[in-house]
Structures are given as C-alpha cells and as structure tokens.
Image (tube, rainbow, N blue to C red):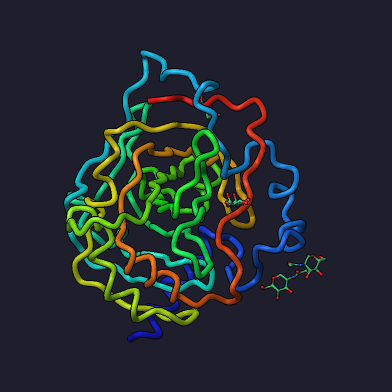
Amino acid sequence: MKVVIALLVLETVNSLYLVHPRFWNYDKINWTNYTACVNGKAQSPINIVTTTTIPLPKKMHKPEFYNTKTKGPVTVWNSGRTVTINGFEQWPYLTKPYLMDETGKKFLLFRMHLHWLYSESIVGNGSEHSIDDVKHNGEIHLAFRYDDDEMDLGEALESGNVRMVSVFFDVKQRRDHQLFVMTDLDYALTLITKYDDMSEMVQFSVDPILKNVNGGMFIYNGSLTTPNCKEGIRWYVTKVPVAVAQYQMELLKHIKHVDNSRNSRPQQDVNDRIIYNV
Ligand SMILES: *[C@@H]1O[C@H](CO)[C@@H](O)[C@H](O)[C@H]1NC(C)=O
Ligand SMILES: *[C@@H]1O[C@H](CO)[C@@H](O)[C@H](O)[C@H]1NC(C)=O
Ligand SMILES: *[C@@H]1O[C@H](CO)[C@@H](O)[C@H](O)[C@H]1NC(C)=O
Ligand SMILES: *[C@@H]1O[C@H](CO)[C@@H](O)[C@H](O)[C@H]1NC(C)=O
C-alpha cells in the first residue's frame, strides 16, 4: 500500500517539479541545463519594491480564497529538497479549497511545500521572496491549478493556468496557540526527517496558513523556483506573515535532505514586469 501511494505521489511531484529533486541541487551549475533558469526574463523569486508596484486595475477583482476551513487527508513527503504536502486533489470537489483570481477564474488547491533556512541559527532569511528587501524565516507555497478536469497539470503549466500563493512565516516567541499555524503538521514532521520519508495525516486544513491573506498581496507573473523554472506562473505574494513557534522551526531544521544546502533560490531580476498591489 505504502509503495503504491509513494509511486502516485512521485508521479504527481514529477509533473510539477518537472525535474525530480534528486537530480539537481542549489549549486548554480545544476541549473544551467534549463534554458528558462538561465535566460528567462520572468523568473521567480524576486524582491518586490513596493514603490514600483501599481494598484490592481478597477476592472479586476480582489483575489479571494474559498473552502479554506475544509479538513481532509494529505500525505507529507520529504522530497529531498523540501516538505511537500499532497492529497488535496482527492478531496471532494464541492469542499475543496480554491482561489478565485483577479480575472474571476477558479483555481483548485493541489499541493503545498515550504522553504526555510538551513542553518543552526533560529533567526534567518529562508524565504525566497522579499518585500523591500525584507526576507522572512520561511515561506509556504500553495499551488493551485485551473478548475478544468480535462486539463492535466502539464497542460495547465504550458498554458499559464497554474497560480502560486506565497505566505511568509516567522518564529514568534509568544505562547499563543493562535500563532502556531503549522500545529497540524508537527507530528508528521517528526516522521519524515529522512529523504523520501512519507507520512499520512487524516485531518489537515490550510485555514491557519491563509488567515492573514486579507492583509493584502502582490500579484506578478513569474516562474517555478526550481528546475526547469517554467514561466507563466502567476504569483500571489501575501504581505502579512503567519507565525510559527520556535520548536516548529526546530522540527523543520531536523528534516534531512539530499544534501545540506539551503532550499531557497537566489532572487531574479524583475525586468519590465508589472507588479499589482492589492
Ligand atoms: C547536480 O545535482 C546533483 C544532485 O545533487 C549532483 O549529484 C550533481 O553533482 C550536480 N551536478 C553538478 C554539475 O553540479
Ligand atoms: C546537463 O547536460 C549535460 C549535457 O547534456 C549532461 O551531461 C549533464 O548530466 C546535465 N547535468 C545535469 C545536472 O542535469
Ligand atoms: C541573509 O541575511 C544575511 C545577513 O543579513 C545576509 O548576509 C545574506 O546575504 C542573506 N542571504 C540571502 C540569501 O538573502
Ligand atoms: C500576466 O500574464 C498574463 C498573460 O500574458 C497577462 O494577461 C497578465 O496581464 C499578466 N499579469 C501581470 C500582473 O503582469
């Protein structure tokens, strides 16, 4: 049973990473084989300079999230580069979390993963994006795809129908349970410390992760932040970080990867891209 699940997950993972995490690392030389990683003009992550952003045009809608309170089963997997949370695709259609974007199109949540700092020190800058050069301790990426069951993930990627939502997190000292957004994940994280480990969770909800999205976001056109750096991904970088407890940062730091490098890509040139401020 476990093997079957592992194969299924690997298959879906491959189709988003496009290049399996085992076959590359964060050394620059490893990225040179992928044209977009080297020559792309709309790459992610970026530093967002707020003075250069423009308000969302009036004819567009404020992006909204729905069904965020739904709880359901997920698998939590140590991919060798990150912790990946899969399984949303099997949730019942009517209660699945989704994003209604600024053009009024509906995108279903299908995956999540995290970036954080790989060092012994607790405070650091493991996030990929930054706002006015301010990085955060970590960053959660939630991947959504266009609501069309005729379109597979590869087609969605090719046709610009994948949306990535970014949520920063920082370690907070206060002993307030409200702050600890990843509590659901704590136990699972202790079970996947080695590369390719996987664990299953019966009840998982993205609600705590998305609780600050009303604090605003930046919208821009970018790419996957791992090889093959596919472009045509629209990013929603939310402004207000969520908090994790220090012990949760420690849990992340105990996750062993293929090697011990960081898991955030250096920032890319913005070039002439428009960044909407919502
Ligand atoms: C690319 O990454 C893989 C996996 O970490 C590593 O084995 C290989 O040596 C790297 N290749 C180069 C050219 O750095
Ligand atoms: C990059 O491409 C070269 C030539 O095709 C190949 O030999 C090498 O293994 C590739 N390296 C990576 C890291 O994929
Ligand atoms: C992280 O922060 C340190 C100290 O401010 C800085 O030297 C380093 O360049 C930063 N790393 C990245 C990847 O931004
Ligand atoms: C992103 O790209 C799409 C498709 O090319 C375009 O319609 C849209 O206006 C772009 N959005 C931004 C924020 O530049």
